[in-house]
Amino acid sequence: MKQKEKEIIRMMRTGKRLNISKIARQIGMPISTVNDAIKRIEKKYMIKRSSLLDYSNLGYSANALVAVKISSGKQEFLDYIKDMKFVNSIYHINSGYDFLVDVVFKDVSKLKFWIEEVKRHFDLELNVFHIFGAEEKERWVP
Image (cartoon, rainbow, N blue to C red; front, side, top):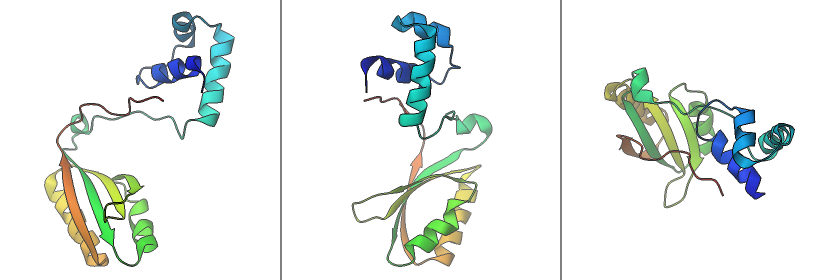
């Protein structure tokens, strides 16, 4: 990845609306070159463009990372939770666990209900880490 591409990505990750002419001025490149670079970056490096949400401002006060250890039925478990609206992200992990599931709920009672529901369907071990706030999020660029 070229240095100018890294600078463009850093600006794209600020969460602000993209102003291509402003980016071009800041990094000293023609607008058309920046536009082409953004298209190349989106195609080659980006999974998807999305906004980071402040869940608490939306009325969702229970955000948690749930470490899941499941001995059998891993694919069935993934299929079960993959389309649940409160599941934000699912990661394959190590250290004795299989998955790390990022979930967001209106309140802790809804989170507890979800945990009990999942436990009713699968023989698994869960370790829940409540998120009280984020100091930094999605900021790093190689």
